[in-house]
Length: 239
Image (cartoon, rainbow, N blue to C red; front, side):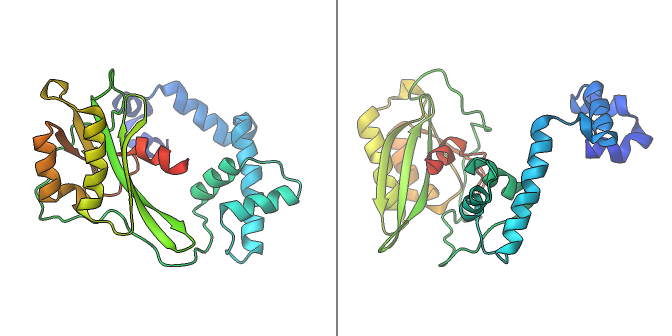
């Protein structure tokens, strides 16, 4: 909509909408809502009210509160709102709390390493089991520090078919999760099973890629640390 606003005088609304596959009526409704905020959906108006409350609480904490503490404070103040709504709106507002400890990066790429093509293109819906496995790993804080957790998920039913916990993020660590999945599902060449990961060095290591070939898995690699590329896996992280 902002692109149309910027270029409509030069290119015209109808041609831009045609190229962007947007109905002109959608843009005209957008323009009417800008002129008359009362036409905006009830959820959008509610979001604006909650954003004002979030901003108040966040500023009162000197920017220290994250979504959880902001949510609890809003409840104490009598503002009925779901925690997921607070998380969504704070992300949209670019607000975050202060995190203790060091930031941990899981996806470390090597631009010189040979990389398979992306055979998924963010299309994670499949018609059968053993058609697409999505793999990733994250870290979990514990009282003794943090540990890495790797998962292999069958995209058909979002079922975890392999997993491994380790104190170090090595290629052997993610390979163990893969071995468990292979043992549990025993894929064959007739399956054409696609193995999709990000560009982390663990998944591009020689011993890992050799194991994919031995198990008749078709490698597919997305972009670095892209939540859209591994949306199935990031749904598991939220659990």
